[in-house]
Length: 236
Ligand SMILES: Nc1ncnc2c1ncn2[C@@H]1O[C@H](COP(=O)(O)OP(=O)(O)OP(=O)(O)O)[C@@H](O)[C@H]1O
Ligand SMILES: [Mg+2]
Image (tube, rainbow, N blue to C red; front, side):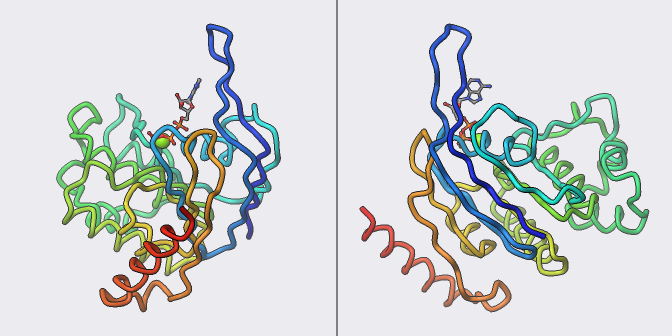
């Protein structure tokens, strides 16, 4: 499976009449098993790009080639749970085929066991984000799109969830597109990092990480980070 993104432009028309250019021409592709990471300043157009890639916004110039049969798992920047459904119902509605065993495993990993019957209004933002992650994983996606999924979690939990995302990605051929502001998350999870400019976003730099995820020891990660800092200095 392959995802091809070729956007030539995206402009919002504001109610007051003026136009707001959000995406400049940009192009990239992802293969099965790959994790692409989008890193860029706040407001540059990342979430807008994800909505276009998911087919939720058709008002843009360019084309997206997404395998039509691909199952899609998505974690939006705001958790977007159905308020009148329990945590468990929210996950089951998105993934009707999910087995009880798989659901239990996800709730255990995401530390949601105690919250199965709670309603979204009773959850903290961090908990709601974890439910959104459970929902995305329960689908057993071919394409996983994560918009800052680890924001508002404490460091320890964010670290555990990042490892879980890495495990999921390693155990299947899912294509993943991750938006993050964290270089640490990017170098632990990514195969290719796309650094974006300020709005209108374009790709200023694409940095592949050749070392397989499983072999990224702390020493290796330190080396990758230093290399990245050098590359970014060069490009300034
Ligand atoms: N529906 C909309 N109508 C008009 N302008 C919009 C709309 N959605 C987003 N924008 C504008 O488009 C720009 C990009 O927004 P977007 O949410 O894609 O940024 P982002 O890169 O995801 O930022 P962040 O890192 O803060 O999440 C912003 O200037 C925003 O105000
Ligand atoms: Mg965003």
